[in-house]
Image (cartoon, rainbow, N blue to C red; front, side, top):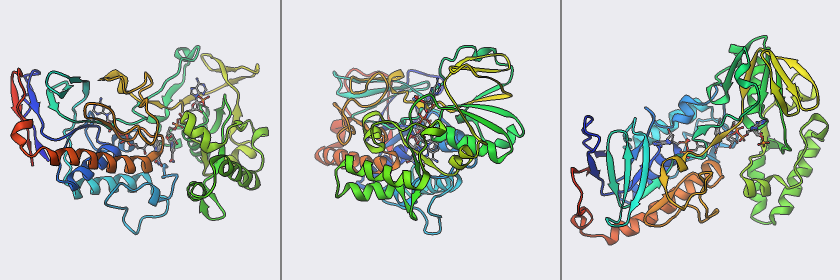
Length: 412
Ligand SMILES: Cc1cc2nc3c(=O)[nH]c(=O)nc-3n(C[C@H](O)[C@H](O)[C@H](O)COP(=O)(O)OP(=O)(O)OC[C@H]3O[C@@H](n4cnc5c(N)ncnc54)[C@H](O)[C@@H]3O)c2cc1C
Ligand SMILES: NC(=O)c1ccc[n+]([C@@H]2O[C@H](COP(=O)([O-])OP(=O)(O)OC[C@H]3O[C@@H](n4cnc5c(N)ncnc54)[C@H](OP(=O)(O)O)[C@@H]3O)[C@@H](O)[C@H]2O)c1
């Protein structure tokens, strides 16, 4: 897509790129690049990892499948192969993204960790700094994801534990924990699925759920719960849809409160919209919780050398601990912009959070998964394409005053 000539020995090398710079080669970065190329706008993707979709390739467990039917997880312009099942495996999803990148001739610059990006008002350009080079562009598209960095909470005594402690991003399979007593901290989708996987490998999971949580079946009466919610929302107000979903969930799953999975007062979709907290879509863990094979535990008070003490006074011995404690955006660590909160999310809420000031865009931060990504990528590409079309004289945009060591990148 582009040939940015980096001089590895010279960290001062500055490359100007005529099109937008996209930070991150996950599904969001790829979708933005594909949509831009459809409008004839070249883009440059800077990716810190060594591959596309690094979250899916390096930081997910073996048994992971998409939770939502494939038609809600397609990237724009080029869908999943027809033969894929309704809920593709992570391997199928990765192969789809590789084919997607290849179809749109997307060739990210790998091992380019963006350490700093800021708008230079004098130039009217974004300065984007990696460990190797500095890039300049009129447009910056942030696509580093809501789940950029594993979140490891401060838990008293965790450093004293004698067994292994891993974050769910490093967890691959329960086969590594066969016959072990495992403390799984966190009852989100990762915590539930890791616990289920551990159980299937004959380990004994104890899952810490410290807060309220909505557990919904993945499907209701043969239709995806997410799909039902999307359809109902076209006709009914949100609070009504939440009520219907909860009524159906109670009918199909029964009350979950007595299992230690207390429902929040706010409905699942409203809660997702307000806080970003995703409902758990059950793919089998709940039946093991009901039969007592996955044990739900209250908050951890303290980790000891051999186990844990819990807030309700229980003490248990464990062989391993898995922290299914979620992820955080890393945007505040590298982007200088008031557009993002200190948590690394756009200040402007959905549906307007995709566009900031001075040519700044965000894709994949709408808390609406891959469906949100697809909508935003389309909007961003159209918006930039309109500006691109208005700038007829390309030589005009490539004149940058006062810049030394300037190399011009060639869009292909
Ligand atoms: C276990 C798990 C399962 C999930 N399953 C689903 C699902 O079924 N459906 C769904 O819709 N969503 C799911 N998600 C949410 C998931 O985050 C999105 O589907 C999707 O990966 C988001 O794509 P993205 O491109 O926005 O972010 P990411 O996939 O996180 O990609 C961001 C990219 O940016 C790169 N990057 C980060 N910082 C920098 C930097 N400073 N410089 C350069 N590059 C950088 C990263 O290396 C990464 O490659 C899941 C998440 C997890 C953790
Ligand atoms: N198959 C799939 O599609 C699939 C599978 C897995 C994940 N995902 C998606 O990936 C994203 C991340 O999911 P996730 O489950 O990894 O993270 P998550 O949804 O953020 O859940 C993290 C959990 O850890 C808990 N936690 C954090 N710190 C804790 C502490 N100190 N003590 C006890 N509990 C603590 C949180 O509790 P609080 O709520 O109290 O903070 C929460 O329950 C979500 O969007 C999810 O839907 C999808």
